[in-house]
Image: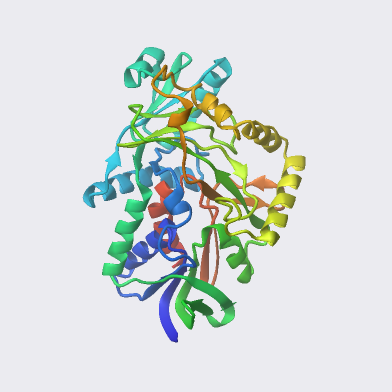
Length: 401
């Protein structure tokens, strides 16, 4: 079978689908779009496995793409969920220090948030306890009333439904047999059938964990490689707090174990460790020897070359044991006899597609977009990727498509 489309998007996650959404808006539904994915349905990876936090724009370096799009994305997603009947938990967030050193960092974080235009307040110990009586806080905390939580799967499926209604085609279970950028052609196998797709305008790479490999087919991402990080959560099957509770981040690489609140449950985590291969979710599922060799080798070099990463990665190792993990979480809240270790149930882990810069062996902090005449490649979509997905892809469509 052979098909011709205007835009071919690889990746049926939130970024790929909002890219299609913005193309439809720009061209008033007049362009033919197909989204392909190697999985059997939408949102199988980071889009469906993230914590579902709609962030408020606090942490990100001023003038970064993350800072630019997080606040706009927060407003858009809040409005979108309300208009489309997607439950949204407007519970806010407290960021709490536990010592003098963290209090100093809290003030720096508050200044950064204000420069970003985030709506935040510096509250006293008493005010923080009024918001959440169980919170542990050293003197002051940051209160973020605009932080919310959603079920990301419900968002993804609502968007999928709307795109289908507007004429976007989806092709699942796709295995790429060959990709010919100079000919605007890709050969796929899906459900045992070979399919040739020709794109007339742009090939758009939103492939997440494999975005770097696809970009290299177009001569891009020459100095980048994805280093996957696996984040493990524990879940409590009831709501135990009024608001999300986060620590003061002490590293640009790891945010720290935090409490995330939903209507009927609470998530605690994540920790963060380098995954052994890109889809190292559980056991030996999706095992790849070549990816194992690559990720282990890169992580060893990173540990040797990057002192800050090494120090903080060793701290993360202490959270492997469930007991140590939960002790870390209890530095932020006081539950008394309300919870015990058996209440914490291991949840499905997520994997972030973190870009490593091979020139300086730094983990890239911001979103990265590269392009050729006939393609656009969206790389390093890590937190707040869900929150920023609409305005980021809107900018990409306006600038490159």
